Image (cartoon, rainbow, N blue to C red):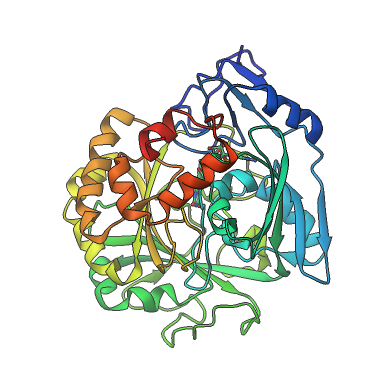
Amino acid sequence: MNVDSAGQPRTNWAGNITYGAADFYRPASISQLQGVVARAAQIKVLATGHSFNDMADSPGAQVSLADLIPDVEVDSTAGLARVAAGLSYAQLASRLDDKGFALRNMASLPHISVAGACATATHGSGLANQNLAASIAALEFVTADGDLVELSRGDDSFPGAVVHLGALGVVTRLVLETVPSFEVSQWVYEGLPLEVLDDHFTEIMSSGYSVSMFTDWRSPRLTQIWIKQLHDDPNPYAAPIPLAATAPPVAEAPWFAATPATGERNPVPGAPAASCTAQLGVPGRWYERLPHFRPDFTPSAGDELQSEFLLPIEHAAPAIHALNQISDSLAPVTLISEFRVVKADELWLSPSYRQDAVAFHFTWIPDMAAVLPVVTLIEQQLAPFAARPHWGKVFTATPETLHARYERLPDFLALARQYDPAGKFRNAYTARYLGR
Ligand SMILES: Cc1cc2nc3c(=O)[nH]c(=O)nc-3n(C[C@H](O)[C@H](O)[C@H](O)COP(=O)(O)OP(=O)(O)OC[C@H]3O[C@@H](n4cnc5c(N)ncnc54)[C@H](O)[C@@H]3O)c2cc1C
C-alpha cells in the first residue's frame, strides 16, 4: 500500500493531492530501477512532490529515486556537471559551489528536485536567464521496456525530451551546464504603483541579474520588488543587456516611486523573513541569494496552492491591466502574486518556447474550491495574450487550448509514443491535458 513513513496516505507537498497509485518502489540501483520499470504496467516518478496537481500520480505504481547514489561529477574543463536525477537543487548547489561552479539561475525554493523541476520547465527570473531545463546538455532515462537511453544536445528529439512531464521514461542522470561560481546581493524596494509598469516594465526588470515583482492585488501597486544583482558586475555571464541607467545603485533613495525596504522582508507582507534569503545588499553565494527561500529552511508541507501563466513579454503591461481588472476576485484568494521574466528557449513544451516571456505567478490560499473559479477567470483574462500555464501548478485549460498554445505538442506526443508505446507513463493528468 502507498503510504508514507508515518503510515499516512502519500500526498504532494501542498497536501491537495492524495496519490492513488497502489504501489511504491524505492530501487537502490539503476539496474533495480530498470527492472521495476520493465515489470510495471503503469508507473510514474514521485520526486519531491512539489507540483500542485496530479502529474506525479499513476494508476499503477510510483517510484522514488531517493535511494539511488546521489553522485555529482564535474568536468571542470567542459564546465559540465553529471548529476543524479534524485538530487534537490539545495543538495546539488553547495556541492557545485565547493568545486568552484554554479548554476546560472534557481527557482524560488531550493528544495525541489532537479529532475522534477526540469520536467515542468521550472524557472526563476531574469531577462537573460532561461528556464532551469535549458541548462541540460544531456539526459539519461529508462524507457518503458527498461532500456537506458541517453539524448544529448544535437540529437533531433533532444529539445522535445528535456521538458517531458514524466511522460517519456524515468530520468536517471542529467548533464548540466555550469558557470564559474559567483556572488549575489539582494535589495528589496516597496510600494511601486502598477501604472509605472506601463512604461518601465522592461527597464525595471533589467535593473538586476534576476528581478521579481510582487503584488497582493489589494491595491494597484507592487508590494515589493526583489532585485538580485551580481556582486561583482560587470560579470562575464551577466545579462548581455545593459543594466538600466535608472537601476538603484545602493538602496538608500526612492527609485521611481518605490522606497527601499528598511529591513528584511518575506514576499508575503507581514510574514516572518527568517525563512528568506539575506537582503539589504549583503553579498552571498549564488545559491543563497537566487532563491527567495533559504536552503537550511525546509518546509515539509505547504499551506498554499499555486498557479502560473507565461506570455510574450511585449504584452506585460496590457496583461497586468487585464489582471488588475479582476483584482476584486484575485485579492481574497491571493497570499502573494509574483511577476518574473524568462528568456526564450527551444524546448518544445517550455512555456517560454521561442518567446521571451513574462510569468504571472499566484500563491493562493489552500482552498481549491475558492481558487478554481478565479484560475478560470485569469485564463479568460489572459486568453488574448495566448498565455501558457506552468505544467506543475493549478490550471484548467483544455487539450484544445494547450494544442493551440504549444505548437510542438503533436511532436512531443509522437515522441512519447516512440518511447512509451503502451502508455506506461500515462496518467489522469496526461489524459486530461494532453488528450493521451
Ligand atoms: C514552494 C514552491 C515553490 C516553487 N517555486 C517555483 C519557482 O520558483 N518556479 C517555478 O517555475 N516553479 C516553482 N514551483 C513548482 C515546481 O518547481 C514544479 O512543480 C516542479 O515540477 C516540482 O518538482 P518535483 O521534483 O517536486 O516534482 P514532482 O511533483 O515530484 O514531479 C513533477 C513531474 O515530474 C516527473 N518527474 C520527476 N522526476 C522525474 C524523473 N527523474 N524522471 C521522470 N519524471 C520525473 C513526475 O512524474 C511528475 O510528472 C514551486 C513549487 C513549490 C511547492
